[in-house]
Every structure is written in structure tokens, then in C-alpha cells.
Length: 192
Image (cartoon, rainbow, N blue to C red; front, side):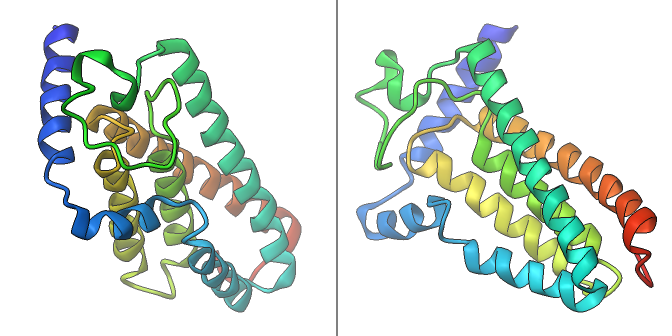
């Protein structure tokens, strides 16, 4: 059963990856770059500051740092544990992969980009939900775009992405509740 699932995962990856074209490559390379969305993160932090104040912002920054460390290190543990080669490293499909990424790590299950971006989306979306009705939808859409970019550039299978996104939802939700507890205990914001 696992073999069958991995076979379908590979087929779906090859289909999605080969939809790309050189016309769009630079856009997707920009989207997949971790530094591209620093301005978005800065805006989200500013919104948290604006709604909750400086003390709450500092608490949130610490919680966010812990959240990203948690999702990133858990992702790395899974990669070392499962040792599933990335599609750009898989010899059996090497001639079929459209690999345009700058580099290709060895193992890919599951995607750190997908888990980190989704954790950030869920965390910020939940924190700011009372103030910005559609922010959560926008952030989830952004995370899905970032996640798809990993397939486009040739470094992750769809299953890597799906598991990364799922883990990101869990991580973002968990750390939202941790932040909520910390804010009530140490910052006493007006509304959380």
C-alpha cells in the first residue's frame, strides 16, 4: 500500500512539476526564496504591535521564534528519520524532473517551507482574526502558494507538501494557544 501511495505521489509530482515553463521560473524561484516574504512578516508583526502593544509583541516574537524552531527542527528530524530522497536526487526520475532550484538537499519528507509558512499563517491569522476578517484566508492562500513553489522548482513531492502543511496547521495552532496563555499571564492585553 505504501509503495502504491509513493508511486502515485511520484506521478503527481512529475505532472505538476512539468507544468512549469521558463517564462514563469523566475517568479517561482522568487516565491520559494525564504527572504522574499520578510516584508510580509514585518507587516504582521506591526499589526500585532498595533493591536496588542509592545510587551505583547515581544512575547509573540519569542513564541514565534520557538514555533519556527519547533517546526523546522521537527521537519529535519523527519527528513533524517524517513530518508526519502528529494525528487531532484531520485535517480529513477532524474531525466523527468524539471529542477530549477538553486540547490537540492538530500532528503525531503516533509517540507520545511510548507510547515513553516503554514504555521506562520495559522498563528498570525488566529492572533489577528478578531481585527481582520479575511486575513486568515489570505495567509493560508499565501502558504499554499509557497508550498506549491517547492514542487515547481523540483525539490518536494506532493506528499511532502501535504504533510508539511498539516504539521504547520498543528504547530501554528499549538503555539497560538501558548502565546494566548503567555499574553494573559504576562502582558494582560485588552483582547486576545
